[in-house]
Image (tube, rainbow, N blue to C red; front, side, top):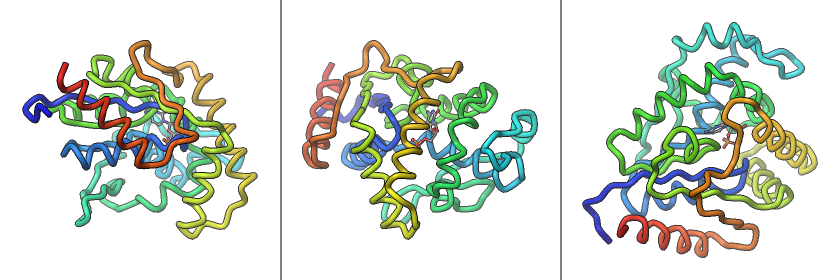
Amino acid sequence: MNTCKKIIIAVDGFSSSGKSTMARRLAAVVGYRYIDSGAMYRAVTLYALDHGMIDDEGTPDTTAIIAALPQIHIDFSVQPGGSQHTMLNGTDVEKEIRRLRVSNAVSPVAAIPEVRHALVAMQKRMGESRGIVMDGRDIGTVVFPDAELKIFVNASAETRARRRFKELVEGGSQVSYEDVLANVVHRDHIDTTRAESPLRRADDAIALDNSAMNLEEQDAWLLDKFNKAVAR
Ligand code: DC
């Protein structure tokens, strides 16, 4: 492996497709920085929920959220084991942003163009020193269109809902599988049909359907693609 050349790796895909797990694990193996861009949209959503900017129907007050953007500071803190926690205005919100309350409200917030512009600008800055793996929806298309390696991950809605359900239950949340599946399907719809940078595969992204892959197979598949991209 050529350890001198630092590349940018963009991992995009549908919600709960396992893209964060594979991106995080690759970053750890190759010694790159990992950024979960979805966590940034979740942090903005948490701020909006906590400041009464999203009504009971889940409709965001777009004007209020745009006005609040300068007051929303998002960062990542590295934990002793190497994992990263999302920080919102200095507070660790890693657990809070994963709850269904935030999952249910995040897609309309992520569809606000001004929110996207602010977060994309931050993400581009994070990639300036390269050696980064970032996952999201628009990383290969908008944030890093010149990334040396682009992956687009998918799995069936049922497979993804089962994974998210397991994660939530293990994290102590009391949710039903049906609610989680409905949330996955609903978010797919919003993410793919929004006007501003909808989720789509970049023309030069490598597609991966990991429905029938275990973690080790997925890791090996991605490391192989990484090694080839670095050698190019
Ligand atoms: O990956 P996730 O489920 O944590 O993402 C949360 C939401 O943020 C999801 O509705 C899609 C949106 N998102 C986005 O629009 N662009 C990104 N780069 C990352 C996430």
